[in-house]
Picture 1 (cartoon, rainbow, N blue to C red):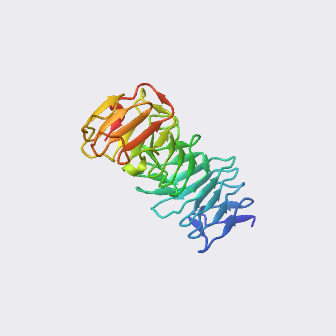
Picture 2 (cartoon, helix red, strand yellow):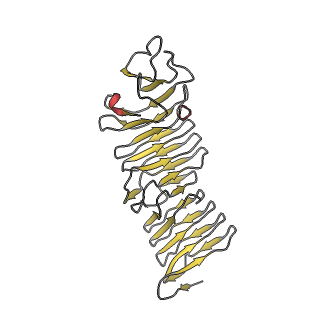
Picture 3 (cartoon, rainbow, N blue to C red):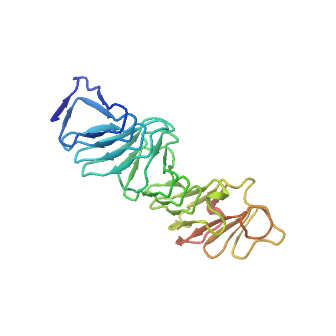
Length: 281
């Protein structure tokens, strides 16, 4: 179709039926169209090369393809599926429309949009599928964010590359590789299973001097003590933390032995000296 012409008020919505469909607007002009709503299903939506447009993927795991014009991909709620993105030559933006919005991304996201606009909303999160995801945000700009931008890979052995803003990166369970990128980043560990003994996560660019943080929500009661070097205290100190050979170890069971009950976080590259000031609990 060459053109969709909506009402002059500009509030016309093109809404897809349920099911998995392909909606190709690449050679279509859209006039007075508020948005295209792909509804439920695993849809493919191809943006226009002739008009700017707004696309709502909705439920389902959608394939969203930007074009040479400005395109905005709209999200609200928590049931948006895990979408794939192919960027185009125009400006592409993911837009959150509500507090608590969950933006689910399929593995292989590689700078699939230019911008993520949090739109002043709170508690907006980007999450992976729970499998072995690779998510790269190195060239993605975050806009209008009242919080620290949260990237959560979910379970699985993920590789997450953050933005050039301040990120809050959650690998969750599995052996993850975490790259903060620019900004002052925080790396969050909510449970011992997030970074286990002998299979701990790897942080590839931790900047201790710049105030980056390890957030240990897995710990209750705070750090018992911190030592840069050496081993755990014989007899055990509850939640004793040591930094040894570019590895952070926390004695969660207070037995004085580094074992399968403990937390391990590895640093493959670190700037400055790691200290207790880099730990939040």
